[in-house]
Length: 104
Image (cartoon, rainbow, N blue to C red):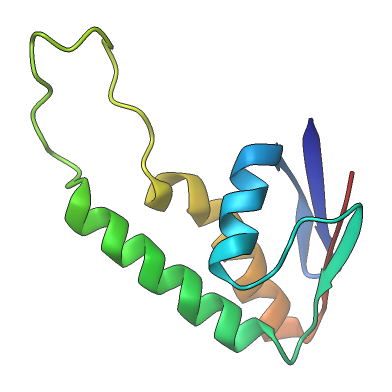
């Protein structure tokens, strides 16, 4: 299932449900059929998400070597790489004073 995030300050952002649940959970929101991150909530949401991305970078450094015995050829995207489009939307929305809405 895909979730669409909307803001007047940015292009629509479509993401997989599992990623949406993870990112919303980090900022203290729950994925419902519809939801909103208000302009008042944006600074704290950005702060929480940036902290989670920073922690993820410590766990999965960008240039970590991949074990040859690993059955995956490509390293999976870590939270930081997957969160940046959402973070960009939150920052743009904060700058322009716009809420971020989502729906299925």
